[in-house]
Image (cartoon, rainbow, N blue to C red; front, side, top):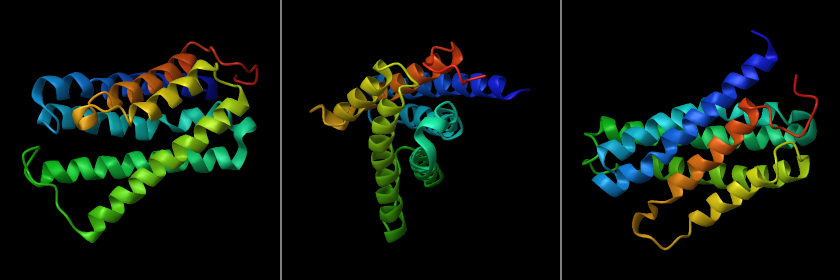
Length: 184
């Protein structure tokens, strides 16, 4: 398998991760926030996003450099920490269990949010400047960030916009709709 095929299949993982993440919204609307169905969908999406996110750096590594790699790592680490937190909730007795409170859990949540938000904000700027993805992809990222502050109970729509962003990036990679000729 050559590099171009690996990039293409990682793009497909981004599409699957995005579709799975988008599935959290109907799951939370139908079964309620933090239901087993929503958390299971979120756990699967986190695992797929942890694997697939690296391709977003691979296709624009020349344009984003070391800072792009670091921001991608922050996003990946944020997804891994979120995966661990979701898994710990299942291990504690399922969706109905009370999320454990401790210094370690609070630090993990803090690093997860810092990694996710800080990495995402910097990634949006770098992606916009790199001009590898079409301009609507950084626009989807901004829409996702704005969706975090939608005044809806339990912020049920954020997962939809987060997933839509990954579907958009994955589509551009899978369908070779990138703005560079350097992608082999």
